[in-house]
Amino acid sequence: MTENDLHYYEPAKGHGLKHDPFNAIIAPRPIGWISSRDAKGHVNLAPYSFFNAFCYHPPIIGFSSTNWKDTVENIKQTKEFVWNLATMDLAQQMNATAAHVAPEIDEFEIAGLTAVPCRLVNVPRVAESPVAFECRLSDIIRLKGADGKEAEAWLTLGEVVAVHIDKAFIKDGVYQTGLARPIVRAGRRGDYFEIKPENMFEMVRPD
Image (tube, rainbow, N blue to C red):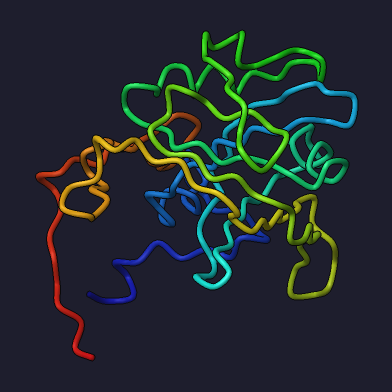
């Protein structure tokens, strides 16, 4: 490949394409389907495409929110949240919870989902989801650019203190990622992929 074959751009000057390729290149990305509750008891459920796991011990997950949204405010108030696995069977319901609605509107009801109590945190999980992580807030960090200028984005990190897994997806003591058929985020405003068991392959690490 020669230099002439490359599409080069500097983000601060624009990408020059029909759609920003940044989040399509960093893909697929797990979906942070986050349920939370504010100090007044209002429940919120929303998906975040900037999401991942960051630490084994203690287990820490995190999601980044562009702009200060209800989910971040709720977690700041109560110091708790739940991550729910978004699967192919729940794709339409997950998408419905992305609607911009007032804080007092319950996205569980909008999407026709069942909110069930958790064990250790006072936030409901999605009953239909095969996996849920109960989390306690570790930190909320406002992101900054290389120049130190603050971005309109906040990274919320939480320690996983309890885990719920549908036993149908545990075989011989091993959780089977593909059996749950999780969906993951790609680019543009609505591109997703489905993870399937037949697409999995294994490589033995050299160490």
